[in-house]
Image (cartoon, rainbow, N blue to C red; front, side, top):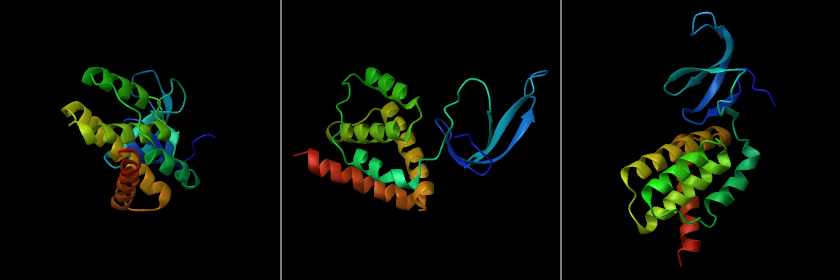
Length: 165
């Protein structure tokens, strides 16, 4: 489905925002292009309507959240022990921009730190993925970000209790 004005959307790097309008902008001289103007927590961003995919997608529907509750409390997948390889793999996965992948990365990195401390880059990656996940969860479910974060943490804890025996 095409993205329309007033739709909630998710950008893989910038997070959740709302499409305010579409407008033609000329950021480079002689290359006018149509853009979505998106209000995000940190300001405004412009994403091309046509051209190479940016990873922009519509917000996950509330009705789909039950599926993702299962992902978050599901069995974590083991991650590479080499921190560089782990980072490359997870960053590569997140490039697809899907909510499913974000849930899996948060679940798997969280489980990894049950047994071993994360290095700084993995900690930053987890915090960033977790923040975007919770922001999208909050908007989709009609909760505050704090309430969404508490629910996500509760689901991860359920998974830990189930699989860390």
